[in-house]
Length: 223
Image 1 (tube, one colour):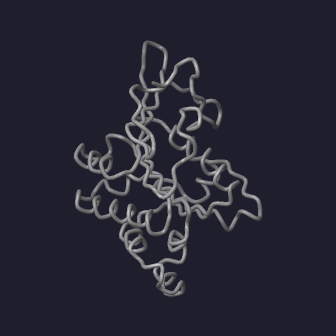
Image 2 (image 1 turned 90 degrees about the vertical axis):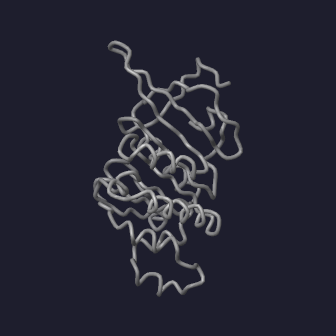
């Protein structure tokens, strides 16, 4: 999908915010990304704040080959914000055993190539902007030092306007899925306000959801 937009692959070593005004299109994007990343032998940590581990497996419908099982860790029904922040701040030079004493599953984030948090906004519904900035700073630092790409899936309107603006400002890239209702028709658009290595798009790009994939409407040209 990103290649069809002229963006190439998901950038590495960055923090990307994937927003949606309603629906679960962002989860379809992640499903597509996970399949490709596992094929490229990337190590992925998938953190879900709203679904159990089993629900995530069923939802993204990924059959993981035996040789890739160790590369895909799912943490379901996650609400340990403080533990996540502690893990992000850990020094990679600290012995692995010491890190794993904190959280044997969450500590896999220390060596992950990609960390997906779905849905990121739900972790901060009761938090102040200071906590949000601390976590985003932590992710940005970890992305540079540990070469981890963070995909933060977020529902628009869950947090305050100020909190959402802070997250957008601190993220390296933003992908937004928007829905428009025109009579009995539903129009879906992708907006990419910023993306590392690419100029900002000057208009929203239409797309369709086909089964478990996203198809760009090629009748529209970007730029």
